Image 1: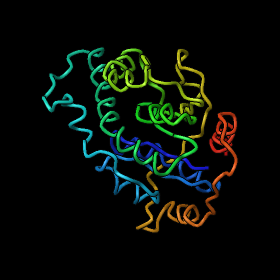
Image 2: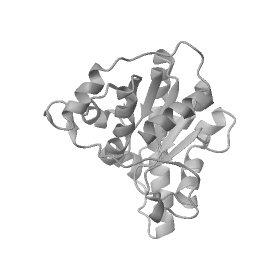
Image 3: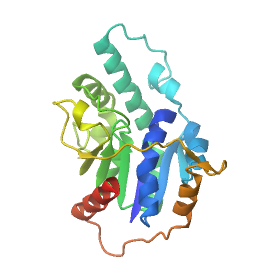
Image 4: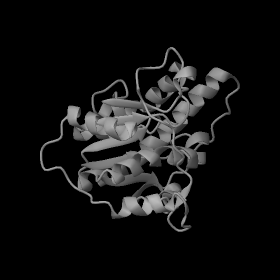
Length: 240
């Protein structure tokens, strides 16, 4: 199977995304990463093939509107959450077209994205393929930041006749059960693994593991991929 991983939002979200991508490669699947240009060196340095999909950086996405105008800084917790949600949405919107072009050419079977990498659900919807969404860290989603992202993405959602961000076929969460909020949506738990220990240029830490991922056979499934099969594969990866 082919897994398209959508990353962005700074280096920390990239590090949070790569362990699942490594697991997919180690299991014999093909992986491609759609990344903002500012994170390309980081992604490829961690042993994954990647294509840049936007030159918009995280700083500008957070601090400026779509027309490039500086935004007023938030003054309360609620406005801060809205501010953050909209910033991640602007970065996702900027990277959508490049990610769509990549998906059109490469034809993935599954899309994987962090929960605030909103290009991932849009691509999954556009190509009618399963979406696997995952947390970047401890579950901290709020109704405010999610609504802010939804409002910011109205043009992109409207293009598909949607009024909400599409839901994943599988939601993966690394939050330890003992500290997971009661209101958090149901998820498949995954053991946390560091994503910043391997650099194929340094031959230290997890580099040997990344090299093994590079030499693992990459097999493309011949049969049609269903949501159930994609969910089964993803569940196997996160439980391993």
